[in-house]
Length: 182
Image 1 (cartoon, rainbow, N blue to C red):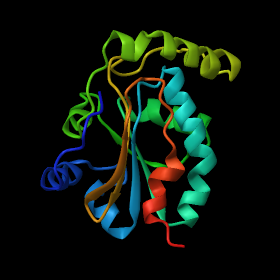
Image 2 (image 1 turned 180 degrees about the vertical axis):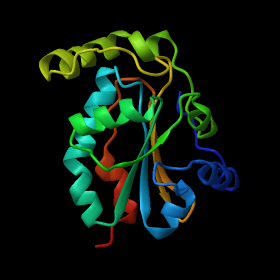
Image 3 (image 1 turned 90 degrees about the horizontal axis):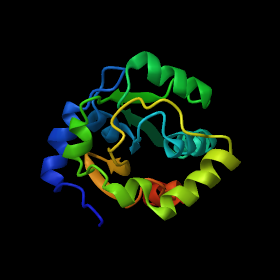
């Protein structure tokens, strides 16, 4: 089931409540440049670490194209910094949301059994975890929380990817394409 983002009038309030580690709101950041706002699964999740690896590879090109990466996670500051460092995402702006309040406000639900542990998820887990060296680790955050990605510009959601399965792999390039100048 695809979950839709909140109505634009609701998003501004949420984005104004989301304060990054640098003390600015996501809304303010989105008025400076487009923001790729990535809500991660818990840090012990194979697919969370896959997303961090993917974003690490794209970070520089997105910065050069005027796209700001902001990560939302459920861990403590120290835990987040450790994971970000491991994936060469040092200095990435981020928001800690251990209560998953912002996840819920952006329409990201808790996963059901098949979304988290179904056959398709398990098969992708073998690929992402065992084959690519991102095996499951200690859970840091809510293991039922589903992730999502939002492209925010001028306080508005321009595009989004809401995971149907924990194993879904967003096409980040397609998401940011609406905000990249030719």
